[in-house]
Length: 238
Image (cartoon, one colour):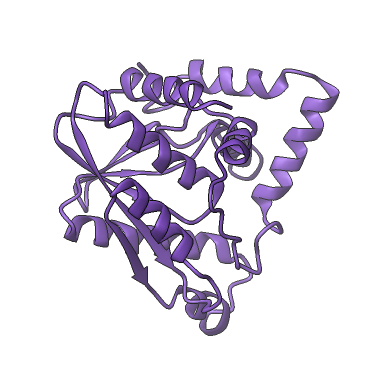
């Protein structure tokens, strides 16, 4: 996917849901995966012509595995002149050694978000950009249906009362396939996820289920996303 196509989809999300106001300072969570790196790339390029000026600050939450090298991400941010902060934590030790969680993803996600929110707030940011794309939205919807018995997924933007931060999801219209195409075309410095639970979660199961359904019923993934857009879920009304 070319940059122009990516910027078009991101701008549509920003405009449809009024995600950015003038002079917002946006914390960009950069895990080192393709999604967050592509989002940082897109937001940086949008800064040049978006009618509401904003600034960026990239953050990486170091889970504490001790085997992940963030130098490539730092160089990537330096190339864009975007401030970059690594947030040191002991999340890996707490989740996998102290607590020995059988379902580690929930606790890990909660702690990662808490660390990111605190660092963003301390740095003067008022928005946090997550790189959840269209496939993530559909997968979350199906996870909710299967395991919670409700039709729900996260919103394009969410206000966090306790921290007074707004979470935005500029990649909501971008498919994972498009992100992969962008990663390959622009050679993003992706860092492998060192988590031992990676690829063994309920989300991975649902991802494979949707892939199978879409192979057997071409276009079903688009239908799922259309259902989210028109399903009167809180926060999805334009």
